Image (cartoon, rainbow, N blue to C red):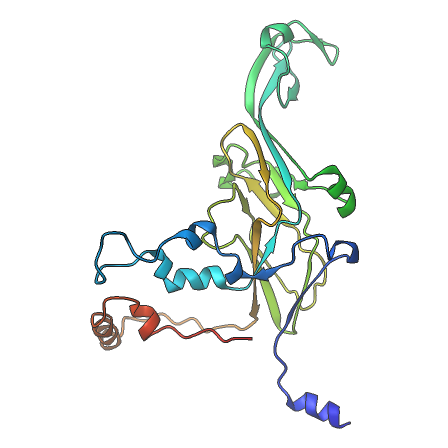
Length: 289
């Protein structure tokens, strides 16, 4: 009885739990706090611009708002290596100009394919028809997961979707996420592209899930933004999604004119120092767990 009373009056800290199948727990990299998976370009950036004195502006390394954005929440790393192959796709036509089939690449010269019988039709013309992409986990790992990468149909986003500007933007792929996320009551989770990480050649469709009630894997649709033909290996552990838990609270929207007194006071404070003005004058240190 006493324990129950204590729990009622004791404010419990919110918690986020990542879980996966038992046989994967010691195989795949675990989610980490986002501040431990900052983009490589940012980690390697020097805080000062070379050949400038201390009164001059610093680099983005000293930009606290950028660092805060990249440090929010958690990063889910890619759970296994992925082989990516992008090839030139071709369309084969018969003598009537009707499409016979699309082929992801030609193993023989065009001159040898013309006149060949394909699907009981004679190939009369061959045209380039965009790019084709393969993405695969290693076979053994695919078997361990029990699934491979999957996809969505273009009709699900519609012809007005501007992803068409990318050469492979209409190929909607999907990471089948092995992690289930559970948050405390009243907390949801935003799934977004890792902030300021420009190293990946894929972009996620971002979304938000009420992870306090939906205890299932949240899969991650994406497109390949690369424009080149070639082959790549995406390393295991690559940051692929930033998950940011937040408490579901509604703010009242207010629109009004500037408070000139407040603005002038802040500008006066800013003008009094050279470096780290926002951090030293206005920033609030993040709470530690």
